[in-house]
Picture 1 (cartoon, helix red, strand yellow):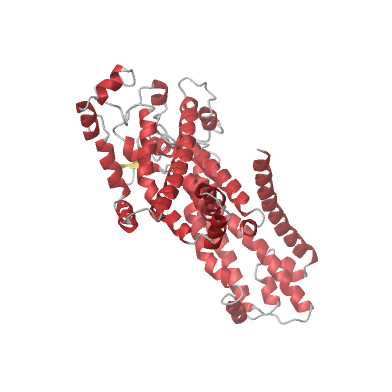
Picture 2 (cartoon, rainbow, N blue to C red):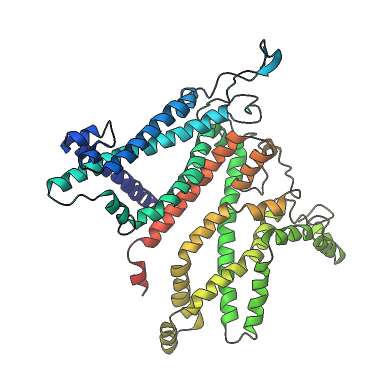
Length: 485
């Protein structure tokens, strides 16, 4: 826990330190800059015009005008309504001119929320750009005062093809991240503080801000009897158990299988390796749907178990109470079967990764260990496994996060097969085999409960972010490569 707090503290501290440095640069530019630097606070092209960079001055003027036009023509239509998310409900009004019933000019809460958020992002980006522009103009002033050459517009363009080429490469990806990742995450966060659900669906109805009510419900503020809090604790627990076991079992299974296939005692290793690779070629959803049918209550596996007397034996000793084995339809049974099926699906992928790593295992270390009399198990524990962890550590972290959000395995194996008998879980539209992400999906697609789905989405994001942050910080801490070598 102390290490976790330290890693998080260092990361957060570094983030705020960089922000402080940015504001310090801006403050220095405003205080020490000449009249044209200060004038750039009002007209972004002033400093460039002073240094005879007229094309840059014109571009900055156009950008400033575009932001002002965006504010007046677009943002101000939605921002004033952001506090209430709309007050005018849709209704038909008789139009005396057309002599027809027409809808009034009603508010759309979701549209107000989305476009207000977009406007905030544009304003924030414009503010950062405006501050950076003042800093750049101040740097031009210092360059001119030092008697150094001030670049022309063409020279600046050339710089973005040479020493600043990273800016050219990263501009489009960063813009894509902002539009397709950052804005949706912010929208998710905002929706979590509203009552956006089936009873408040725009445009037919409006939704409003409700503060932390959804999080209080999610974390058991209304009691752990028939609330979302009851389901949340159980779904979160199963999500973490699933992520841990599914990651460890496939990782270790892939390593052991790779070691077995690479062993000199194994006959026809290429043949066996090819068989496992073929399983990867089959689309995962096809495999999962077939396995679901095999292990369903009336599937072929239950038929075989019944014919050989296994079902009756399990019923006699009290492990089952039905005429079939509830592989995927009862708590406990379903949890174990999902993990076992995932092993069968995931091990071939890990086998390929481990095989590639083992091919590059330092042979001199292995030979030295054998000469020193190390046993095969000691070689595996002291050389092979540390090397595998060193190389595949980042992939292992990624697999854990991926399994927290592993929608396909859970949904395809249990949908229309598993039905909860726990009324408290059913009241929250959850099942014992749900992960947070499948519960979120069901809340949105089947019950239109966007407010609680958004709250759950924030929890998933926080869990994955903290784990990834801490894990990668530990991996890159110090000279790991030098220590291993």
